[in-house]
Image (cartoon, helix red, strand yellow):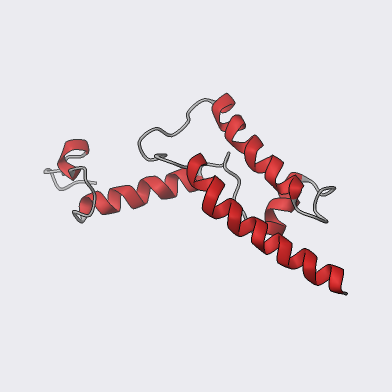
Length: 113
């Protein structure tokens, strides 16, 4: 029983360390320079793949199931990058970003969508 509790604590600590120390480096500046080539996306995904194998009791599970168990998103999928892009556009629109909204976008003046 104690081994199971220690395993859960270790898993939580590893995930917190990964999310706070490693993943920010992998996702740094994705709004400005998102990887477009699949080889670049694969390199980023391999780092997370390696991390998920380090977690006790998950080593033998398939990668997708390890992600679900650790509540992580795949870096290869576009959801995180699209989310980061949308957050940056929202900040630009509301004046909370260092970039000007007008520099990247223009408002439609003809009234049609």
